[in-house]
Image (cartoon, rainbow, N blue to C red; front, side, top):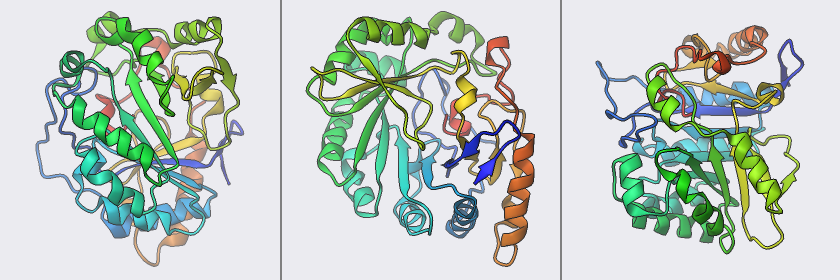
Length: 323
């Protein structure tokens, strides 16, 4: 298994297959997606190559991210290929719910094990104010279909924003009383171009955790392949509540995940300065070189990010690497 100099072991890979996104979420891409040249994303063969290499290193969970991964027409083939890779036990997907109600069954049939769906409000007007679209009805229909499908785990991601959905927190928590989902509140993170927005909208996730504990919620132990969320359960609720708190103490101590960008760069941290290009090695006959290069790179993984100092590396927006 891959291990860094701090002794952290890695079993989880976040694989971006596109940085293209069709939404204008005000916390990520308020001006929409822009690109100066035609993007050259990883091909299916390259994806199979790099996933196989990480599987040989003990990675057993792959999360497909974007941008918005559903914008790739070959997403079903990508899910199938990853699912069939020896050593991969779990394939997950993060989506903004674009055409979710039309596509969820196909993804389930391809072997998708888990899905995270971005939903920042249960109020159509608030949703439009945050993401720039009025598609809450379609999103809720897709979530309902996901819960009825073969997909084992359905999670909802909600970015808490002080000037927007924070006042609806109680309403969101009540949603899981009858709905068997895991609702995770994500602490807003500062990026290169959102400093003023961050100051106006940041809500401490530690505050949410304390609020849950004061209301009878109990923390659940994290699984070995779990992401960074702290998750809570309550005896009177069918669903769970979680939160991701990148500004909390020792957040990076339990890091178990690595990231591959849509153009084949390995990123050791979401908020690192740069990525390491693996693409030239994602070809038949260079498997050993790829394996050795990945092991070498991991020795450069830093102890922690520097978000507390207002340093977000080269991350200009969260669509770059799927958050």
